[in-house]
Amino acid sequence: MKKIGFFGAGKMAEGILSAIPSKKGVLMAEKVAERAAELKAKYGVKTTDDVKDVAKKAQLLFLAVRPQDVASVADEVRDILTSDQTIVSIVAGKTLARLREAFGRKVRLIRVMPNLALRANAGMCAITSAPRTPKEDVEAVEAILGGAGATVVLKERDFDAVTALSGSGPAYFAYMEEAMVEGGIALGLKPAVARLLAEQTMYGTAKFLRESGMPLRPFIEGVCTKGGTTAAGMKFLDVPSFKKTVAATLKAAADRSRELA
Figure 1 (spheres, rainbow, N blue to C red):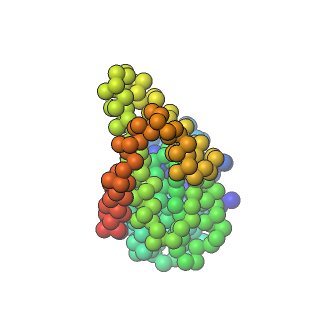
Figure 2 (cartoon, rainbow, N blue to C red):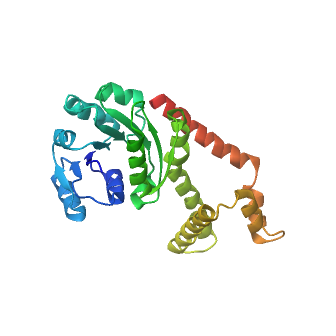
Figure 3 (cartoon, helix red, strand yellow):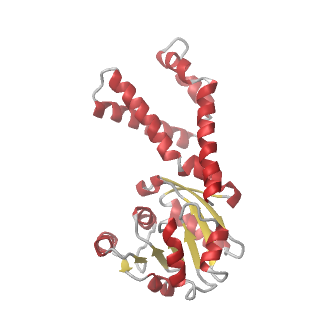
């Protein structure tokens, strides 16, 4: 297996790291000494405060820095990188073309759109690659990220939609949970109880649907017994305006993703 390195060691990088079966030989660049010590103690990985060390020693390079830090990292490592190395970028909004401009024409490129659930080993990661990137490198990234959730390989043109749906989706999901919690509190439940009920219900429903593969509409109709409590509540939710609001939300996020690219 190719030696793995990280430019950056934040929470998303840690989520990926936790999914790597063997962490022996993994090298992470982190300038904050306390954070580097934490990762070394927790995972047994090697750390360095110099991104050039990673560029010299690893073949599969995860780029996990803030968008505004990409240029400075590229400036330090561009002349070191070779055609045998692959950068795997999880940086939001940085297209393959932008990454090519930053890191030069020699290095191979893979772009990943993850979401925050990666930090709980339940992430959703979309993967795309530049021409000349070997299939085995894409498969290696799929295998690593698959250990931290689910993956899908797509064309880059789909990434604005992915950003809107799964990238931004955790905030929308949490907003729906917040609304359910507030509704439960209004009905007299204690806040902690309302949150537990809402959160476990959402988690369990998603888990069942994922594992069963059951179509969504039959599932909804199966829960909505005629004349029952769910049907009474769905009269307020199952209206065209609700789905139009969700569609408009996703479109606004996708439009913004295109603007930022």
